[in-house]
Length: 291
Image (cartoon, rainbow, N blue to C red; front, side, top):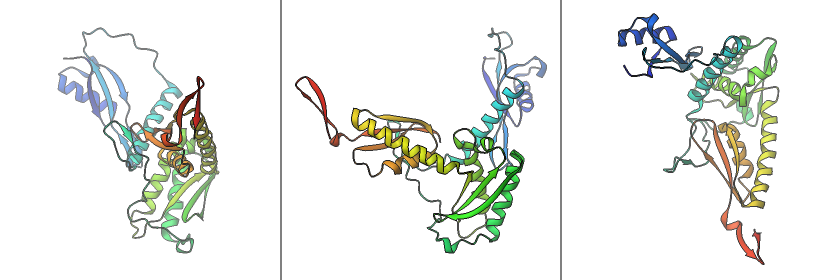
């Protein structure tokens, strides 16, 4: 038996039982490391992830286990894995064109299938669809935090579900990933049986507006830096929605171009100088920039 064999199951116990059966070793004799505790996702809809263990050869030398995370640290790690799995499952469908060198063209951010521009007059906030969305969102946030309420309004041809109160930090999550996962679920619930798709967005106490404003300022600042130095500037590990904000902010700037690089939903965004607008030349032993 080679060291480092992986086994998966609905939970760690099932994974261990599978390892025992295949390797013909009693469960209490199996030495293993937990790679993932698994996740049932939210309501079993998305983000379901199997538990995974790595079994070591009983006779092989193993390094002493580092102090494992317990208590709140372990819970936080499991929660982070669960959310990451959920977000990857939910948002890996973002459209982009892949190049052979691993670089990716800026996302086109196409509207969902069947989506069309919706006028505010076409949105009935008292409709059954919207009420289902409000009720579902309230149930989800009640499971996460207390004293949070949902209100709804129309904004820029879409339905805005606004969450006020409760633990905003938990609802938003790291880089806004919890909020994006919640929005994904509500979108699926609201448009599940609808002939006419409703564009919607879920926000927590104005977080999205503040985030967009900060990203816009950052994008403009880095673009200026890129134009002055002639060197690319990088914004690392941001979501598709955040990359969209940067792309749109700098779209009209003829001296720079933006491009997403990497794999997965959270990727880097690089701001490149346009060569035709930035030419280096040497003059009297000094380097200057022509724009």
